[in-house]
Image 1 (tube, rainbow, N blue to C red):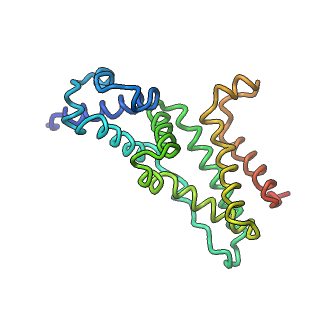
Image 2: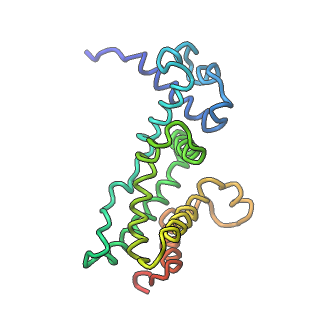
Image 3: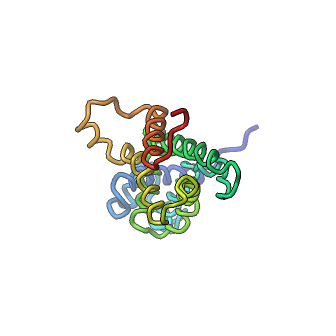
Length: 219
């Protein structure tokens, strides 16, 4: 006979999911405990019981976002040191893989409201420097930063650190625009939206290599 369900854990999960959606839509200050509890079909006292209050619930929402939006970039092959005999070849392949994964992760959440809301919250925290910034950076953004930086440093060893950073921001930013201002894109373009992730990744890879002054593979 199967054990009875843990109703306490079910309520806790419902509160986290409801809070994820509401915090993403209205911000931390824009939503109250009663509204979260009502959406989760739970007693508002459960927020204090499970999380110690609204702040504790918010921190749990962000931590849950780590699990909901794992970084595939962290699973890519590491980029070798500049002196490696195949460093340039591996950096080219690494950059292509990085852009492909980054684009797929950005566009995939569009189909899943909870995943989308989690990514919005994580990016908002990184932008405003919230209470979990260091943890967010370590778990969510640092793998992207180091992998892309290692690729660019090998492909453009003549650049200053500031130039490498500018390039990294341009590479990620050109993909993120499709995630964070879709309404503006649709208002100003007749193109199919959202774009096909593979087509977009291929275009951004070619565009990025040309911007770096590196001949695209096969060119």
